[in-house]
Length: 196
Image (cartoon, rainbow, N blue to C red):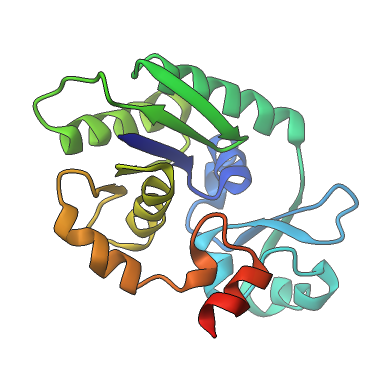
């Protein structure tokens, strides 16, 4: 049984910790040469800004929609990631850091009365101690934990936490809602083949 802890909009969330005036506003973080959008707030996503979209294609949204563009600060993001990972590691028997903004926690040896409450507590503690919001998805496999996390982020009812281990009846509907190309580990070529 695994939990995937993933920071919501990592680079933008880190910037908002130190610049609260950015909360609720459309924000993008640009690549090293300020050429492409490598992180987007939910508000920027709602404006149609795509991941890795060239900045020149969306620059007009500064005037038209109040889009704010920031140069990346990778030192800050690395420091905030380290804080979040340290906090998550202290909460579970084993941790596997997957990327700068996500880690798997092995929960097989964890004994808690309610896993959903435990995940909500981890989520609240992370936000309180670091200022960055996370979502937590739990599944019997890492792939299903990734899927649970993805759905936890998108669902307002989930509140940032989704447990597919203790709610196995949710797995099939979750898979039906997910296109094959959005399943972790399925690349473009496999997507075309599987869709056929």
